[in-house]
Image 1: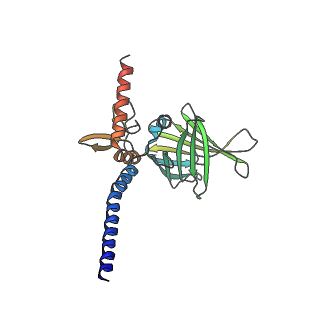
Image 2 (image 1 turned 45 degrees about the horizontal axis):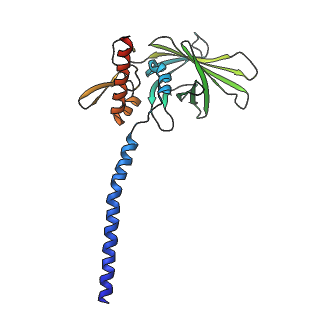
Image 3 (image 1 turned 90 degrees about the horizontal axis):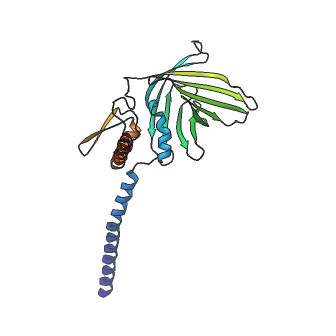
Length: 257
């Protein structure tokens, strides 16, 4: 009986040691997993370049919406913010609207195969609508597919200058060629004037837009354009620093030609 008890105790001790060893070996794997999860999402170069066209929109805006141009009847005020979003599921430029009559939020992305911009929107009532389109001079024109009632919607985002942007909402019925106006929102940039790319102001190290937020890494200061880029930089600073150095080298090479 005494020998049996000793055997049981030995087996329990061996099992405990094996479990502890397995737990210790698993810790590095968990740490590595956590480390990799912290890495920021990398947007493909072609997509990032296409979306960088809209770096001038990044930031906050004050908007006045009008059903009929130059008429205060039915007019409203809203606020909006454009910010870069880096996410495993959806990456692009997020468009968040406060007190909007036609939009609650949207995400602007780019399809490199179709060479078209995509806008996934959430309407004020919580329903969704998807648009696709192309850049036409200074305006991004996006059109939805016909809904169940055959209605087709169009959004045109026109950048007048660094301080003014217009967003036009239109609709037509399937089979018709002309659109009729639903409303237009005129946005004025909120806060102070932002530096424009090439104007001598700091440049966002993540996207190349106007750098307005200071971040630091290993004692050096860099700039980003929005909270999305700030998070992306903090998650993986070395990648973006390396990309920025490569861009700077390419610029110097082009200038020397």
